[in-house]
Image 1: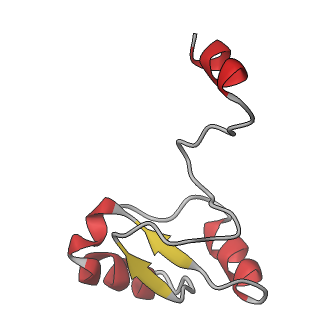
Image 2 (image 1 turned 60 degrees about the vertical axis):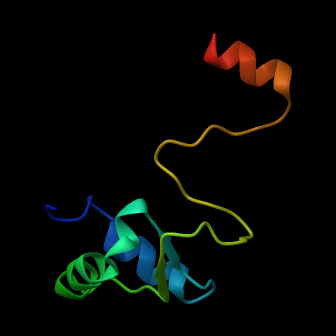
Length: 77
């Protein structure tokens, strides 16, 4: 894994003041890799898991905003 995206550390620091930050990743089967990376770059988090947690919201680089099936099918074309 390379360095974090520009602004990631600052965003996580800000979000950690108000929210519980749970890192959800299929790579979390061995969470020590992610934990070591987060600690190396001094990025705050509260938990790392490979099980999708119940959440107020998710921040995901591959997410689609689901409103209804019709607009989702149109989006995916």
